[in-house]
Image 1 (cartoon, rainbow, N blue to C red):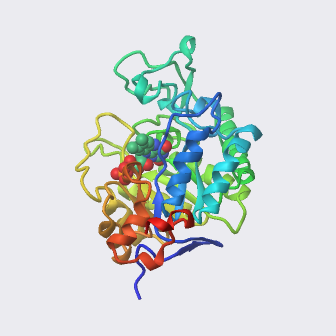
Image 2: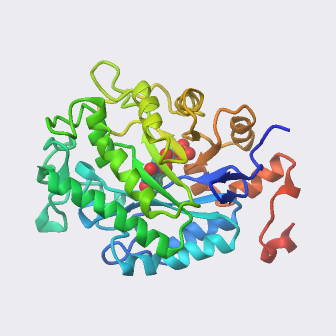
Length: 361
Ligand code: FNR
């Protein structure tokens, strides 16, 4: 029988109870310097009680200057791991796999949170100097924070920071580590010729531009236990068709380059440049990219973007377009997306409501 939304899936020795993953979504609600709060426990915990197979944290910074805002989650110390440990434990107790997205915001760092306007922050009002492959600021409307081209030492520091963050994530109890190489943040900036003008080993050729993602994924893979999976989120395209930029063909080549260190490519798109032309933001708008990577490589893929309906998510799996249906904003509307999907798809016998809620059934 073909797999469907409620078929379990294994990556190495980790088995997700179904094919729904909660997409990483920044909550800008950390305490102090990037510590998880009650908000993260309740927010991620409810998506686990809601039946998803995998619950992924928001972009979690591997070093302080890698945060988008001062309110982002971080995972650069034991204290950060301790604050996330109850989050991971509760997700697991509810039958979902706890996953953490490891991130560095590069030139998109040092901004206020969305409800304060997402405005650039300067060092004198809570911001910091940002780092990137080249010293081109993210084209903000005005007054971007100071930016510096990374030295080779900076690059090594970031590789090491991803490794240390992976260790802290394991200590906190996470099952899956995802490297965030999408959406115009640091690793995507290295991949794309639009943001990377270096002439050393990390710029220029495809091999050089993909070197950092390869090194970081390798480092995380070395630290992460052999029986547990590592995912990589990429932007399949810069959506900048009229100039030299990162394309879906590049993504297929990158996926091949990561095949021995990544268990799944989480396929998103865009975010590198405000001039991007998004062909559509309708249902399944990024699925064709995931499908192409799945067809042209040996890797499993997760599809994300505009997945809101149970039948739609189910069809992605049944038609072998993707291995995971990754659901973002619909999970903000409905933490119980998966349990509700089971009702709609006549699959109630394949999910378990929390025992505490059964009198409502
Ligand atoms: C996001 N997205 C996102 N992506 C990511 O890789 N790391 C992150 O931390 C975030 N943060 C974030 C916050 C919020 C509030 C939203 C709405 C989105 C992108 C998200 O994971 C997803 O890829 C997109 O929202 C598209 O999927 P949906 O929402 O159409 O299912």
